[in-house]
Structure formats: C-alpha cells, structure tokens
Length: 146
Image (cartoon, rainbow, N blue to C red; front, side, top):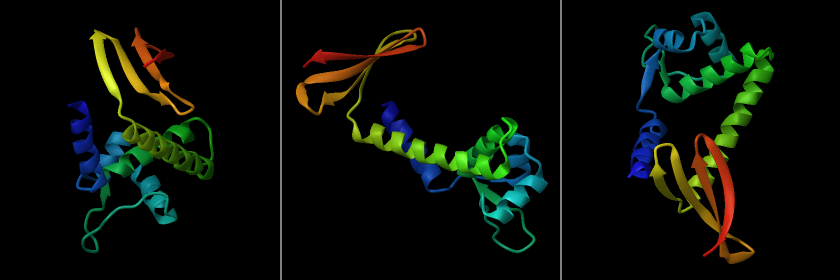
C-alpha cells in the first residue's frame, strides 16, 4: 500500500507538476531571493518563466536542491563545494532509489516503532536471505535460511 503511495508522490514530483514561486522558495528555505537568482544565473538551480517579467516558478525538486546547498553552506563550505556535494548527494539518492525499486522488499510492522524488512537473497547463496530489523530507532542487518 505505502509503495503505491510513494509511487504516486514520486510520479507527481518526477513530472514536475508541483511548483513554488520565488517568494515561497525564499520563505521555505531561508535563502535570499538575490542568492537564488545568483544560483540560477550560475546554472545551479533552474526555474520556469512562461513570459518575460512574470514570476519564476521552481519545480519542487529545486526546493530540495536549495535546502541541501544551504545546508552545506551553513556547514562552512564554499558555494562551489556545496553545489558539488549536493550533486553527489543527489546521485547517491538516485542509486538508493534504484536499489529500493529493484528489490521486492517485504515490510512487516511488528508493533509501534518495530518492524522487519526482507531485503533479498545473497547472490552467492540464494538459500540465505538478508533482512533488517528496526526497533526503538535502531536498525540491524541479519542473515537467515530461506
């Protein structure tokens, strides 16, 4: 059920149907409009403008990008390094998303804050599977015979 919901959200974001204005982006991220315009001029973020002198509309994905760049700037990195680190983070998220989508994860809720996730079988021994347990915020990986 939750995978279908996640697919819907992913599809909405992926289709870039969700947009925010410059003032909304400023309000949500705490990044000034002059910084956002500069980042856009440098090609670090993108917006759409249907007609000249109209509001810039930013895909919701730019909201995540701006927040991440700001996070790294707040950590003391230069803008160039912050942008590079954001790009690396985005690529890591893509790999993680591919991993999750390629797995047939079976998630079992075992109570409040507790659960088990079947991750898949070991490539070298298909009779052994990897699973994770989550309990009280702690995650552990385990092996078991199928």
